[in-house]
Length: 302
Picture 1 (tube, rainbow, N blue to C red):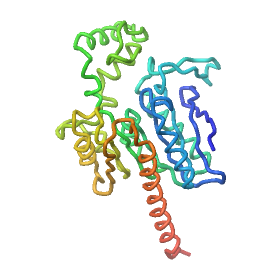
Picture 2: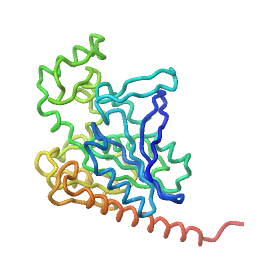
Picture 3: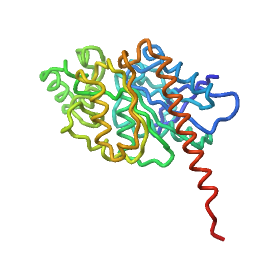
Picture 4: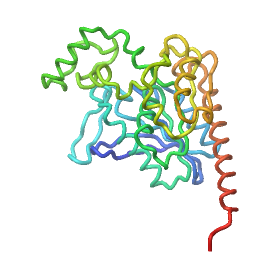
């Protein structure tokens, strides 16, 4: 079963999501934060994941954020006015409150076990959030094909970066750029500035000696998954994923999953990725139940 949901952010925007749920209440949910243009149309694997997890007794939230589409009609609960959001005007500073909004929603629904996932830029957002908030509501993380932002922006010229900088510094950050950022994103100067001139979500790299401060601050454990043909990794997807994990404090406790013969959005492997995630979730649930049983058997202080 699928139900449209809306979650309220601190800035008042209502974000659209979809809840895949079983017929009876589940105690477990996987929340998947979308990346840029990471909607159902460009990333249909979300259907496979949601339906497969539901059949296994786990709920799934497709957690659409500001940039899932170019433009999204939204409603601002604070101003009581309609508002247009999208990849054209997203600010990376929204990351914390967007993720927190979905976690708040899951908590209010009474889920006992909450797993936090993110795909592409959504994975970078999960890294950013968990590096800043050691949120006890999150039991495990799942990073699906994190994005090497520098590789994605390799076509952005020095002249374009300087133009973006000048627009923002001169108070014209909300003006649309006269060119497509990265060759395909129509956006405001403020949005391009976050991408090109800040390191807010530029937190994973193919090189081992780069800045992995955010990754190093994550205290949670979980899993990382990537397709072996992912083109957002400078030619070595498996090495890219291993390098990210190597910088995590609990690297030995994490699981690495490689999908052979597929790319960034798991072309021709949608059901395979869903099956692997479902198997992973089922193992996590069994492990947690075993821990819960051991905890219940401990003697209590009178």
